[in-house]
Image 1: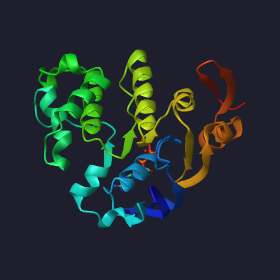
Image 2: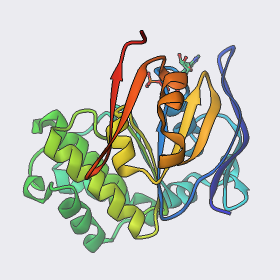
Image 3: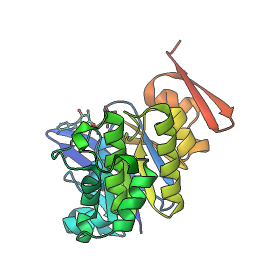
Image 4: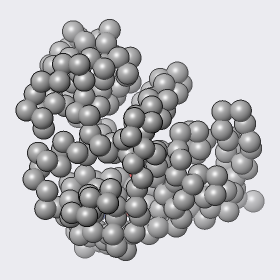
Length: 247
Ligand SMILES: Nc1ncnc2c1ncn2[C@@H]1O[C@H](COP(=O)(O)OP(=O)(O)OP(=O)(O)O)[C@@H](O)[C@H]1O
């Protein structure tokens, strides 16, 4: 049950981008998906969201490819990397689009999503007038407004300032504490160690490691995944991971 990759393989064009991945994601936990550029992180999220042809992406024992799009969107919220905004709607109306899989409504969920992402003060602004970071938070609010059981977020911090990065990490943790299974692609290893319960480490489309962050995210795993030297330093807020070029 739950969200899983079950011997998941994805071919795009003439390339095998993901090969034989088996991962069971946990509801109520944050899973960070890590790996070098091109490792297959975004493709994994897209496969779990039913957006690329894949066999072996499963939700509650059902192949995600066989779910009706509306049903899938109700249960799985997907925040793409570099999401485009096609219409210059007021922020609140854009966030309300997150309710479409439910047929609209959900005023309380829309307000809660605006508050949670610190975008309530932007509600009346046309979305194209926002800064990149403001827009990123609004797009996260749109996904949260749909109250999905699973949240798949692809690099949600990349355009945020340090305060909003930390607030977004805290929001992901709160979302998981409410029972949602959160799967998030990150590049910053310290942030991953701070937010994640579990880590999925990908390399060249294959699963290098999967497990609790403290067990998986050590210097050897970081070296294997990224080809860098890593020093893992315990710290109040979690762990700081300092990277350096290989000697
Ligand atoms: N449509 C496609 N056709 C062929 N290859 C593709 C296609 N889309 C992605 N790829 C390749 O699949 C591999 C995995 O891509 P993906 O975007 O999943 O990587 P990623 O780990 O998210 O990388 P990044 O950290 O750079 O965002 C890459 O080598 C990419 O070039």
